[in-house]
Image: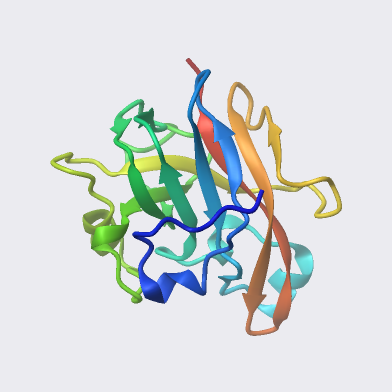
Amino acid sequence: MERSLPKVTPVWMMSKISSTAIEILVGNDTPVHFHPSKIVPSIATKEQFQNGFVPDDFEMGTLVGLFDVHRTVFDYRNLEVPPGVYAVRIAHQPDSDDHRDTAPGRMFFLLCPVEKESPTSPHKLEDLLKRALIGNRKHPSPWFGFVSKEKTTIPLPTIRESPAKHQSILWKQQVETASGSGAAVLGFTWKGPE
């Protein structure tokens, strides 16, 4: 659906984010809106690009969209996310004992309040985590993300029960690499097991 970008969207971000929004129904009333990036850069090599994208083909901190929250919602860790506008950036879960097996994969999208945003992507985890803190919380707001094996020819965006016991929204994303550009299907999990 066509929807104007929120007024608080930083000027430098306006040209990077699509005005086409994906509406996500949370509960029985107010939806939230996800505006994907027009183009997402990838570090995939020519061979990786030809074989299909995987999560590690996207750098930490890469901007993938804007999340416009009109009411309080709950993230993947069941923590409150207050109404506001958030940049959505890629994160890779640390490979540590306290994070092992806590999610179906290592790729996450972190919500970063737009007032903390800048044109420079935070490629180090510690810098990204600082930018992603909401209010006085000690942990950022993670949303499980993944690169889907779905074909880009399916009707998108769509909602899937994927991974198991989760609800995810899948969308077709234009991706640019040093070897060329193409499309990938990215997934954003907005509801986990209850």
